[in-house]
Image (cartoon, rainbow, N blue to C red; front, side):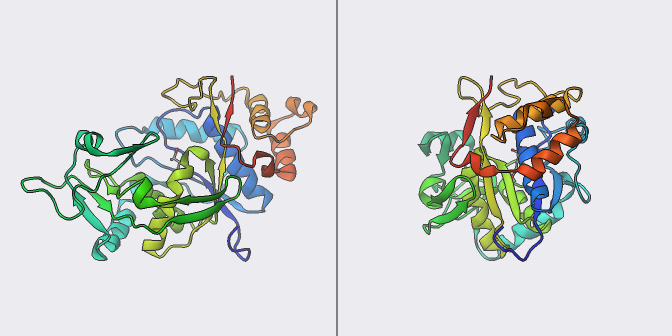
Length: 301
Ligand code: GLU
């Protein structure tokens, strides 16, 4: 934690686009163990902001699965779909301080003119100094600046990103009128007073954008720990797109054991035949995330 005087508050924030699969179970388990090991609180937030992609059934299914795995949360669940007013207030704060500008570019126009870095496109700044004549605003972007953002990830070490050069001005209000994940996650982590974000390393390079927004909005920055993501033998992240199998509710104890092995926790072999409560008790007491230092992905069959 950045501030040792605070009570630890962690969270798991799934997007309900489908049932929980092994990769998301690992993120849920890692954040749960870290919170409980620090005698902290563990919250669940349903990130159902992207209404075209998320469903109520998937949210209910994820929550049922967490319960079957003994991952019991504290406090009331937050649903992002009900928090538009909070995102709007943050948006207006950014807007009134001239951090935002309207952008008329379509996805295709950006793809045609942007520099590419890895799988991310760097926005070339076409609308930064005003909309081209005859164009109407679609999205709102926040101006990135040249000062590098630096943070110390508990597992991945020192991360520095030059937002302007590596990401570019990024979207906070999408062309379809929905607030972007980067803004919502920052508003919600602050509202829930999260001290420690533990999540998959696929979000490692989103973190500087989130820290940047926290600074613009005057929010505290939590400590971050990015866990390795589960990939298949082709190096693809396990997700709905790669047809990852959902984790069943019936074989929770053995799957939980496998998730601990994935997190390099070396549970004793006989624990495999215990119930979820006993497995979690062992795992909370013995939680050693440092076995995962510098590890961003692990292959599972
Ligand atoms: N909802 C995001 C996801 O499922 C995670 C957000 C986060 O943990 O910050 O990928």
